[in-house]
Image (tube, rainbow over all chains, first blue to last red; front, side, top):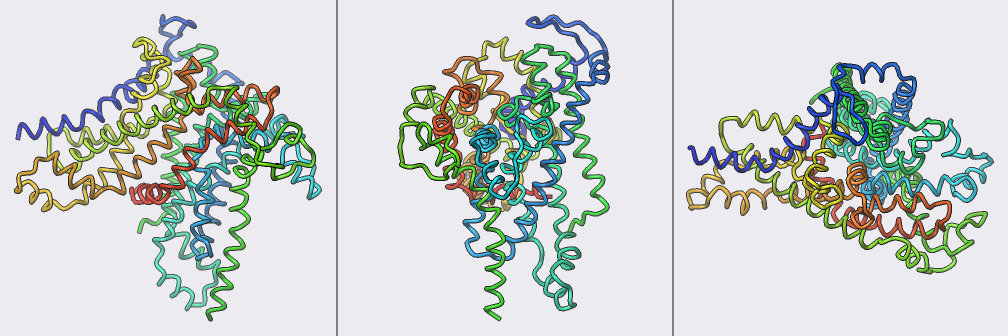
Amino acid sequence: MRSSRALAWALVLPALLPLALFVALPALQSLWLSLHETAPFSSRAVWVGLENYRLLAASPEYWLCARATALFAVETALPSILLALAVALALDEGPYGRDFFRTAFLLPVSISSAMAAMLWLFLYNPTAGYLNYALGRVGIVGPNWLGDPRWALPAVAIATVWKEMGFNVIFLLAGLSGVPRELHEAAALDGAGYLSRLRHVTLPILSPTLLFVAVVSTINSLQSFGQIYILTDGGPAGRTDTLVFNLYRDAFVNFRSGYASAQAVVLFVLILGATALQFRLARKSVHYG
Amino acid sequence: MASAESRRRAAVTAFLLIPALLQLFPLFYLLGLSFKIGGEVMAYPPRLLPRALDWTNYSLALKAAPLWRFLLNSVIVSTAITALQVLTSILAAYALARLEFAGRGLAFGFIMATMLVPGEITIIPNYFALARLGWIDTYAGLVVPFASSGFGVFLLYQFFRTIPKELEEAAMLDGASRLRFLFQIAVPLSAPAVTALAVYAFVNAWNMYLWPLVITQSTSMQTAQIGLGMFRSQNESMNWGVIMAATAMLISPTILLFVAAQRQFVRGLTTSGLKG
C-alpha cells in the first residue's frame, strides 16, 4: 500500500510541479506584486496597498481599453458563433464534398493569430490590398481599414473571426451529431417546417454546445494579443488598445510591474467573471440531456 | 424522392461554397503574392495569380532573415513542449484515474484549477523568476514553463477512466507492473486521445506568441512567430512579395500537420467531454 502511494505521487508530481511553479505560484505573486510599487529595472518593491487599483480605476485611458476590449469581444464572439452555427447546420445537412468543406473551415484554426494577421495586413492595404479592390468592384469605397479609428477594431475583429470560426464549427458539428434523427422526423410528421424544428428541436439540444462555444470565444477575445500586435500595435488613436495589450506595454515596454500586475489581476477576475456569468445566464435556457 | 434529396444536397453545397472560398481566399492570395515579382505586387488592379512560379522572393526572404533558424527554433521548442506535456499528462492522468491514494482529490482539483488561470497573470512573475535563473533567451526558458498542462491531464484522465478494471487486474495477474500496463495497454488503447493531445499541444506551442516575444532577445533564439514580426516592422521598405514568401514558409508546418492529422485532432477534442 505504501509503495503504491509513493508510486502515485511519483506519477503525479511531474505534471503537478510545473503547474505549481509556473501557474499557481506566479498567479499569487502577481497578486502580491499588484499591491506594490516597483521602480523600472529594479526588483525593489514598496507596499502601496490598493493604490495600483485606484490608479487604474481613475485612469480614463484604462477605461478606454476596457471599452475596446468589450467591443472587441462582441465583434468577434457574436459573428464567429452565428457564422459557425450557419456553417455547422449546413454541413449537418449532408452537402457534397463534406471533407473538403471541413478542411476549408478548419484550416485557419491551425494558424497563429500573428500569422493570420500578416495575411490580413496586406488584404487591408488601402492602395494595393485585394479587399478594397473587391469592394470597389461592387461600388463600395473601402475605408483605410487599419488607419481609420472607426474601422481599425472591426478590421482586427474580422481577421480574428476568420481565424477562429472553424474552432466553433468543430464543436457545433459534434453537438449536432447528438441531435436524434427520430426527433426531427417526429416533428416533421407533426407538420413542423425547418425553422420551427430548428427552434424547438435542434437549438435546445445544441444549447450546451452553444454555451461552451460562447464561453471559449469570449475568453479568447479577452486574451487576444498577436493579431493586435501585428495589425495595429494598439493604434490608431488607441482604438485597438485592449486590456491585454495595455498590460503587455506597461509590463515590458514601460516596466511598471506593479501597475501591470494589477491589470493582470483585473483581467483574471474578468475572465473568471465572464465564464461564471455565462453559465448562470444559460442555466435557465440550457438543456442538459 | 431521390431527386428532391439530391436537389437539397446541391443547395446546401452551393450555400457552403461561398463561406468556404472566403475562408480559403487569404491563404490562396498569400501564396499567389509570394510568387509576384517587383511591380507586380502593387499593380492595380491586383491580379490573383502571379505571372510565373518565380521563387525569387523566397531566396530574398531567406537572405533577409534567418528563416531556417526560426523554423528550427520553433521545431525544437514545440517538439520539446509536446513530448513533455504528453509524458507528464500520461503519468499523472493514469495515477489520478486509476490509483487510490491519499490526496488524490486535492491533486486532481489543483491541476484542474490551473486550467482557469490565464497566461497573462503568470507572465510577469515568470519573467522575473527566469531572469534570476539566467533562462532569458534560452530554450529552457521557452520550454520548461509549459512542461505540463492541466488540459492534457484532464483529456487523458477521461480516457483512462473508461478502461475496464478487469483488464488491469488480468494484466497484473500475468505479472505486468502498473507502468507496463500503462504503456503497453492503457496508452495504446487511448491512442486517439494521446495523438489528439500531441497535435493540439504542438499547434499551441508553435503558435505561442506573448511568452516568446518577452523571453527571447537575440535573433538566433526567436521562434517563427516572433521572427515574422521582423518583417512586419519592415513592411514600409520591403517588398510585400518577399514578406509573403517568408510568411508562407513559416506558416506551412502547422498547416501540413493539421491537414495530415485533422481527424485525430477533431476526434480527440470533441470526445474530451469539453463539449459540455
